[in-house]
Image (cartoon, rainbow over all chains, first blue to last red; front, side, top):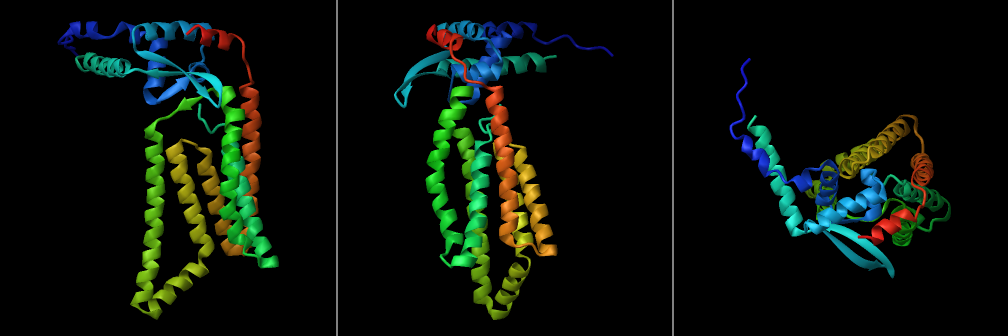
Length: 105
Length: 200
């Protein structure tokens, strides 16, 4: 069977490398489906160490994809994490780009 | 991981069913309409307790998450569906009554003589709907248990309240087992998590 070469291999260059890293992709996926979540929730969901999660979150925050919201719930300080508009848009774009790469094969 | 894996919802629903059964039993002895009063009052008392238990037991262990409108929309669709189904049954009765005595009586007799089967099917359907929407597979088992018990009750004549006791107890026991498993799986830990969180 002869397979065709990808029509446009340069499409793969459009993939956002910041999101494409597996750990950050997991974080983005989790935050994409909820309104917000706290650090502990993400840590349990992703089975990650606090240090590792913290460093990846910092990278996403620096890129403007994740927003850290300091709030009070019943007078106790609470840190909530949520995707920014830019983060949601970047994630959607990442999905479309990845689909495009595979549909070209 | 589900927010309801802590078993708290099972414990509260089980207690509700148990109290419902107790109310019916008490009604037959005291004639205080407890069969209707207890299930009506119970949610108002227990929902704040359930929310408080969730904040004290679940959230410190697995964290806090806001699900947004997606889940809420699905639940709203189920409640609307159930309300429409209820209204449909009500209208069927109304139509039956307006069409004449014979039709209404036949329908009423059918419902009364097969009430256990109808309740069993309704309980299984409602449980399955919630199981599907909330992604909780154990609710299918509760639905199946209700179906089997109500069908058995119909054929070997077991009183309604005893069936409720059995279902309620089974759900409470399962709820406590899940709660113990949950507390063991997610012990309260602070320390490095707080330090990492502060660095954000």
